[in-house]
Image (cartoon, rainbow, N blue to C red; front, side, top):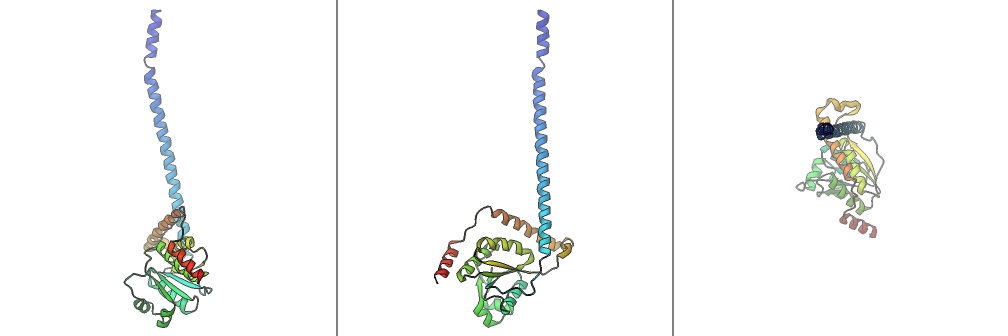
Length: 241
């Protein structure tokens, strides 16, 4: 009986240590598994981001300026370059739209300065060009453009902006211009077709920046965007008139 007691005491002593080691190994194993899953998710997200960027750059690179766009009710140009304004004024002068909205004009710029800068006909500029000075970014462009379109009850609108800016502009505009059809008129300043953007550092930087903004705009789409009170009021006024 005494021997049994000693044997029992001798074998029972190490058991807590063994159990503790097993628990330690289990924690390490779970940590390693979690790290492997996290690494896999990061690689997957990075691959999706890179693939999406390739799609975006290819889409922008294949955009071309329409040679003879169909006539629309109106034209909207988003400021950001002289070539955009020139293209919009040429469309207006050729009768492709009844009126032109220049959205995102700096508050200090006068109508006369804009007319001189674009080289547009003074009479045409006076009668058929509206200026938006409230918009500070693409979201603001969409909001102010929606008010303008609703106030005039336009059904089709030609949207003028650079090719790299067009996807995000269409996305933001499409959320607010529910009753109007947008016709893109991309202005192409640099040939990015056939992967040329890969060998042009400046173009690559612009495309990457615009792609990240486009993703953020997509993410914003999770939250419903409603027309502003001013836009609704303008729409009601137009309908009543």
